Amino acid sequence: MLTRIAGGEVIDPVNGRAGKGDVWIRDEMIVDPPSGGQADRTFDASGCVVMAGGIDIHSHIGGGNVNTARLLLPEHHAAHMSRPAVTPLSNAGWSTFETGCLYARMGFTTVVEPAMPPGGALHTHLELADIPIIDKATLVILGNDDFLLSLIRDGSSPAMIDDYVAWTIASTRALGVKVINAGAAAAFRENVRSFSFDDVVPLYGVSSRRIVKTLQSAVARLGVPHPLHVHCNNLGAAGSADTAATTIAAAEGVPLHLAHLQFYGYGTEGKRKFSSAAARLAELVNQTPEVTIDIGQVMFGQTVTISGDVLRQFSARGSAHPRKTVIHESDGNGGGIVPYRYRPDFYGTVQWAAGLELFLLITDPWRVFFTTDHPNGAPFTVYPQLFELLMSRDARERMASGLSRKGLELTTLASIAREYTFEEIAIMTRAAPARLLGLSDRGHLGAGAIADIAVYRRDKDIAQMLGSAALVFKNGDLVVRDGEVTHYRWGKALRLDPPVEGAIKKRLEAYHQQRYGLSLDWFTFPDSAIGREHPFGEVSCRS
Image (cartoon, rainbow, N blue to C red; front, side, top):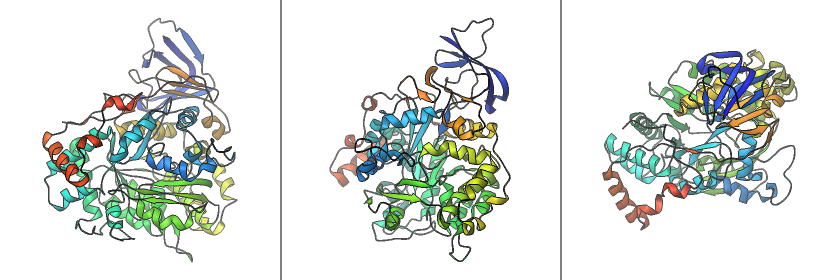
């Protein structure tokens, strides 16, 4: 099948295309224009913007914590009653099937679940396999588990630690590694309730800094394309910008990715000792080329916070809305579910503005990534409204007019004139995520890329334009027309398969027998267990 998307405004930063042209598809792949070729079908894209399919690098769409949120909030689930129309409550109100459809309607075709506990890998993959259309990937959590902390405490060799990280990635079918408040969950078990970057984990005698640096080095040595994905200490606290600044400085020339930086963009200025420090962090990011970040933008309304940061969630339980929570801990991989409503009051205004400041003040769109930390800052269905805020200063001013004046005075947002272009949007949501994740087959419209393509009909209403794609192709199949799903297909599991040394398997077998009385086989699973998902062969680690 030869398909032509004709006459659209093609925006493809990777291949230097920014103007009217055609995109050709043969079966599942994008191809060069055939010499004298006659298309089997042609789609008229005149008056439309044509981009590669969108890629979301940080969105909590599957796994134990997501399902726990559904259990905690049955009143917001479609099986219980109609979902509130004005503020959809994140994944708590959606089935896995709806998740794929909602992403596809906006032109997104690849999504990363960024927090998979190793012991919950099978559950996570089975749930992701039930999400249609989009390709999925996962980041596996390390940094609070007894095995790793013991290796670091005992001075194990870098090779031994590399072997353990490689085994964890391979056995859980992950695409990368995430560390959540390194060491804090282990400290939480010892009744620690505040934990910073240079604090030491009781019983192990290792600091959060040492854990992060150990994992950062291991990920780099293994050649994992995505740098260590860091959820820093002190999330959400006044003064957390100091923690983020210290973590940025600790990169020391080695790639490092900081997740949802907005939640660390807070200073202690003003009468309430809470202010935006986003401008300071943006400058630090601009000066540190080895650091990439995603935002975790706050938008107003009801949501539910889902996190493996058990210390933070335990501390936040008093602010739950509605007033019910789940806090759990299991071998350093627990967390918590805390429903929350972001209000346009002083504190909500500062948070909202801080995220936008980071988006607008970090100058390199290749190093800042478009997320709401779904659902923690807001559900991903607000993406169209967020695009509008980034692309229109007038839209920001209209929204700010209804927010806390005192809160806005403690930010720099009003002074920022920058408006994102479509090319910058394409970089931030397509080209840069593909490069960061090592996915050379997507994020662009060049020959050899998979035919993941989004076509948007130009409209002065940016939210309407980018929230309801005119056409979406997934692997060459037309799956969305005029904002409605027209065809269902199953995506792939994007994963790494690094080589694993036999010695680490023997050591892990003995550890699991001694600690759990179970064979290591209980914690691994075959590819066949994943069902519809399949390994993706073009992403690989260095041997």
